[in-house]
Image (cartoon, rainbow, N blue to C red; front, side, top):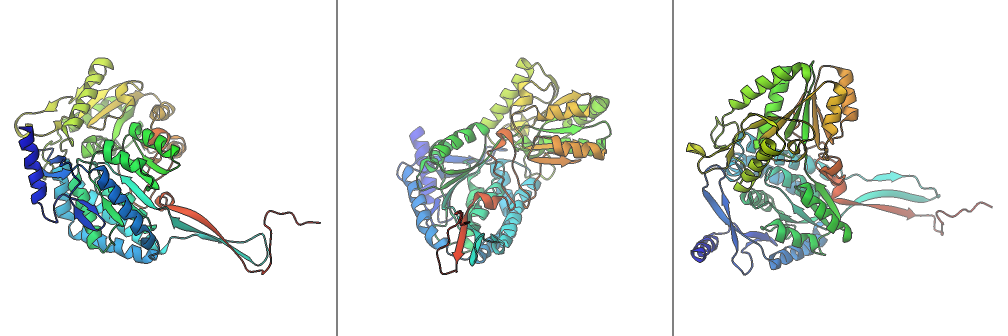
Length: 512
């Protein structure tokens, strides 16, 4: 039976045309190497089989890297404004296909159509931003300590970049990496998450049709354990950029460090929203609901803790529970749906495992939710009730990233206790405070141990021209998006031009 199933899946791949689920290497859509291993792409709301994709072999990865290395020599010499024109053309293609891409993304990863439209829009915005940077790859000119000598610095490309991206933002996050990498003159081998293969294909197609030369961008499908590790170990890869869990990121950082390979890591979060006694509660409630359950809680910036001042705790909790229970759960393609499924059975089981930890080990009080939805319209999907616990700062559900529709309410007595509680985690991505006190706002901005701080807004959301990333175990210090991304994907070169016509010795004391 297993052999028949494998034969059927391989047949589906073999019958696909140039638009089919192949790797993209050296400007061509190619079948994976010998072996015939494949994986299925399923709709997490319905269980429908959307397609089958190849598990790339080591040979596929080798061909992709060699293709990127070959293309690098010519691509790095293309003027940056000309590289930017290709990015701009790809932006227009994304704009034209936005609705189609959003619907496809909802089918393969589950979040509601409003959100997948936003995902594609973020890629559009990123393309526009970095197209503009094509005329702004500024260096510096400066004075020299010696006469008749000119000094400047300039950005240079790094080389071949191995980019490993997650499934929760399957077009936005690849755009954060691919666009600045290409703009700086690098070439790319792109490994997307296996739960969102078609979004990656659509994104690569847009750049292909925009006129990107063969070999500059290569797409290889497969698991992180195999394809991701091969990219990490390959001596031809100069840079690894990874978005995912802190556990995997730590391993990638260790391996990259031993190889002296440049490495950018954007990792986990355990983000908190503070609600002070003087907050606009209506606004804070809407922020908590969106921050906790947007994308079904599957965001690294999701609001997984809500820190409530004791004076507003009772009222806020009652209203939040009521609003949470009223959320419409279902297929993300339905306009009435407010929260879709989790991306996979694996994620569903992980969320349920943490809910059981909250109930049985942490002894947290379950206020609403806490159950898998499996009847009626939910029978074939990966649906979980939006869940709220009342807990304490030290509980596992208050400390560990769950990556699902689960949030923990924590009661505090003061602003100082609220800040201390927010910082009481090994992560430091996003933090939020709702208050009308400007003095508290400024203290929160100063004292929150986060890379992103929101005032009177939820913990989720980002704008492409600002740096994105966090402190502590949320990453290794780099920031994605905005101008800061250029520092990941370029090297600084110092240039000295001596036009004195004689030997001048810098750092030599010539005083007599």
